[in-house]
Image 1 (tube, rainbow, N blue to C red):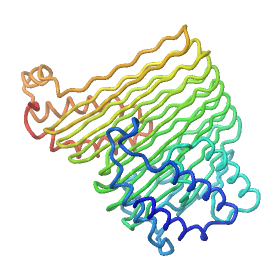
Image 2 (image 1 turned 90 degrees about the vertical axis):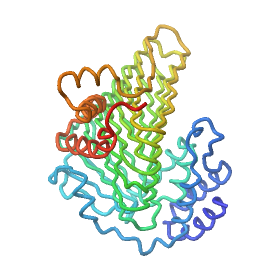
Image 3 (image 1 turned 180 degrees about the vertical axis):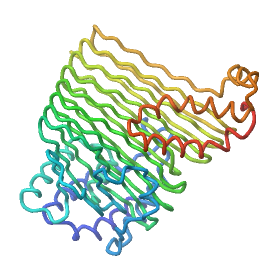
Image 4 (image 1 turned 180 degrees about the horizontal axis):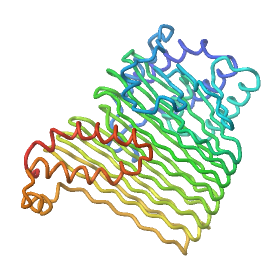
Length: 435
């Protein structure tokens, strides 16, 4: 029934697309119809049931989008806690609502709406390229119902001093946002980018981001998801690193009733390196699923990955981290660590670290742990006169702090820590370790 509803929604919205985009949307929907949406019968979706997400997505996509507002929700924008003078690209309900006010030397931004011939060709080429590599059903869904697309390019050799902000807001309207973000860094370029997702009500989003870093380029990426407790949030990032390119990414998931994030990094040339840090919180009754895949495709590539997960009462978290060392990728140095904390009755986290090696001369490690607060550590703190709630608070803060300390922007780091502390307060006030 969901695919029938999506078919009706697709036909209802197809004519609103520019002529040059319709062929790409047609191809994507055809492939989506053949593949179907992900189900728990598939290994990568074993622990995550998308039935409710699929129904809401189909229902929302079937509603008329003509009246969709892009007025800025001031309270959500304030909650993003980003410097007001930093350049920002704002999406509201999946559509671009505001572009950076200032021109930034070396940074070019192209958008879908009102595209001239040159911009249209650039977007068309990029979307065709992405369609060829985005074989997953959610990528096809995004292309078939594309709500807005933007390409950001940093010219070779340019370091963007300002932190570029991409803020995604949903004000509670019945909209299934399907934005597409494409970031291109030229050789030797450098960029610091923050992506922040916030919403009211039963929001629905499926955000696809592709990033290409040329030789010697450097990207510092921070992604924060703090959507409402009834939101559905799907997101994917695909990063390709050229020779000696660098990625430093921090992924934070603190909200939504159901959230799924997929990160894929290709270390495609010698000297490429990635440092990935992640933290997710599955609140009461929430489901958070984190999947990562790092492909070492060339010699002398390096990756470090640390993920921390927290589940509160009746919350469920999922972590699946995969490292693949391909044939010929000699000299690979890779490590993956996942630690998880259960803070209430019915809390559950399923973790699956994976390591596949198809060559010799490598240095690789991976591991995962899941447990409750250490009773010995709690006893030690209480023996020093610290109350049980404060002791729990200190231990949980230290656990999460291993990741939040990697957030470079002080205002954002403080906001994340404050939000996290508020969400965790019911657990730390429960008194004593969970039994």
